[in-house]
Image 1 (cartoon, rainbow, N blue to C red):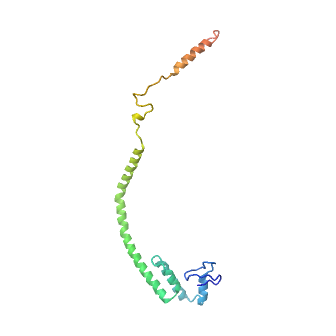
Image 2 (cartoon, rainbow, N blue to C red):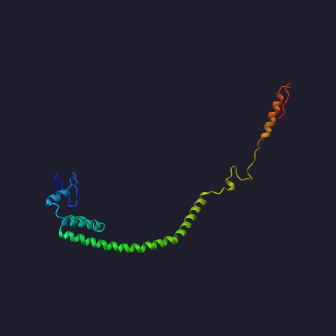
Image 3 (cartoon, helix red, strand yellow):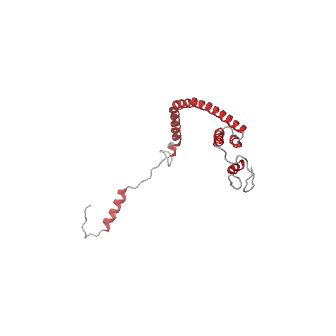
Length: 176
């Protein structure tokens, strides 16, 4: 179908012009001689509904519904019936698979949780590096040589003696 506004060529399925955006559905209705009666509109609406439903299996269903031919209407109806049969088959299949999956999860969940917990514990244990005696700073305990450590009282006593020597003799000593 050619757009009356810009002259661009569009497919029959298009509702709007690809080039300028003109509403082609209104143009096709105007060219066909009007919207039609209530029965014609209802027929077209039902064909569109069935075509939209059948679209997830038959991709060309909406284009056949837009043709508005008797052959296209029968094809859309047939595609809708086949789609509903496939859906019923899938529905019954899924209602048998859902309980099976539920039972599998019900029985396997405790074991999977325990397995995941054990794996997590293995990972945590592997990350903790045991402190080996050789890794001590300065070597093994036998190799460690303790240096002399000054005590707190040693320096205090030394400073106290210096303080007594520098103190004038005429001031009385206060007891601590």
